[in-house]
Image (cartoon, rainbow, N blue to C red):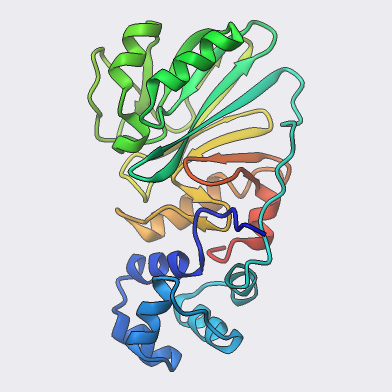
Length: 275
């Protein structure tokens, strides 16, 4: 099967190693492999043996059984057609940025046809096309974090929709043609009849956050199916915030990430080697 995950085995061990500030030499020595072998594994040019997977998992404080399934490409999350919530709809808008797919979303309240735009995938025209095609009313722009692949094109969306834009108070601010509205953990925003709660998920960025409503959560680059976003700021903050604020939710909550396929809390608890 074509492997659908955003991160392969090499991405995962690379993120864990860099996040914990461990050198390639330290990891290779502790795992009983050469630095050259480790480099090839991180670049996907050398498949590890089962023994090597478990040794690396132990050194990197990852779950070996979960990591082995990903190394062997034996798991990917199910992709249901429905979110499980009759009064909302989620539209995924995926487009390449720098050669790699990035996800933006529309969260639609079916009772009122109001919609929140979540991130931009750096392609505002695609979002505007979806708004027109579905004849919904843009009500807000919600930013999970400020990286350009998720915010480029924001000024055009603001001009075309007239929407207020919400971003975490601790997050660096992207280019904008209107005043950004700052939010913090626990704030609640309304999109039609939907109540959207802000939850802290920093680590990839200083003020990364996720947006939760009913049985869905938009998680940006905090967590991917089977992995996490690059821990650019703090590896421990990323792990702790995802565990405490996302994986503590009911197993049925569907997680919509900034890259790769959607997943669920339950599947990540069973299959994500970082947890």
